[in-house]
Length: 358
Image 1 (cartoon, rainbow, N blue to C red):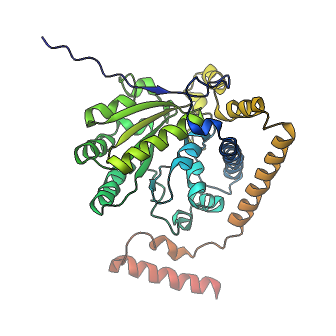
Image 2 (image 1 turned 120 degrees about the vertical axis):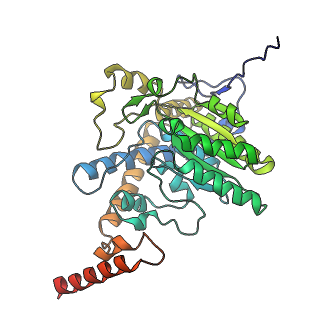
Image 3 (image 1 turned 60 degrees about the horizontal axis):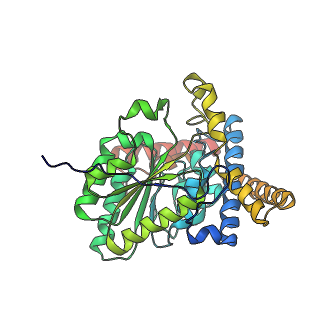
């Protein structure tokens, strides 16, 4: 009988929940300017997140998915990507998008129901993808095009832990492994697929090991440690660009809000879990580390909070002051050329708007 040794999934953490560094650390852990930049971005994202929730509660925004407690995942991967890489988001990716040229006001536009917020100019990045598990397939397709055209860049896509139970997810990874595609799959494992817990949706001991069947490496990363998130994403993207080796990164974190503003997590989430997991959250962890290094203090914190609040307020004004699209815009994002039946309906709407406005 031949015994095959069990595949071990590596787990990466460099800055633990006590803000202590491991013995072996990547270069970014000693780059003060880079860490301050990452910290500032996480504060901006959290500030914007709180404002977006407030806008939704007051009827000025549609259903919105909070990123609270998950800032390190999206800020970290956004920082790791090269400009020429292709990003294929899902719907919590604010921290990545703002590093790729998307304005905060655009993000508000999208969640306010205005498709113009989904148009990322001067970018090969894809628009928001709300259907669960659809974007990994798009990523494999884009990565095939990159390889076909012999381009030196990578594709990165993000999905939640719930998407890993979708057939689309497995199909995307399978083809990436077979064709050796330059793609990185990031799973934001925030422990909840809407109301279904991580334990209830899959019997796999890790989500990272789901890459094994596809023939490539899967890793677990502490998603509350932005140093680990940034460094492991840099390494994965480099392997994708240079060697066309796909990789799966499972970012382990916790969702510190309802699934969306249309959800009520108190109906299913155990009361003690959120507070317990908050002790690991990424912003306080990095702040304490920066203070230990002597590069951060209460005065700088207050200044940053004020600057972020001002930036968010300005973005909200820009969003609220954007003239609405005409009613006919509902036809503008469906087809390149409208079928005759829809064209007739559009013309009727144009006539109705003319009558309304005189």
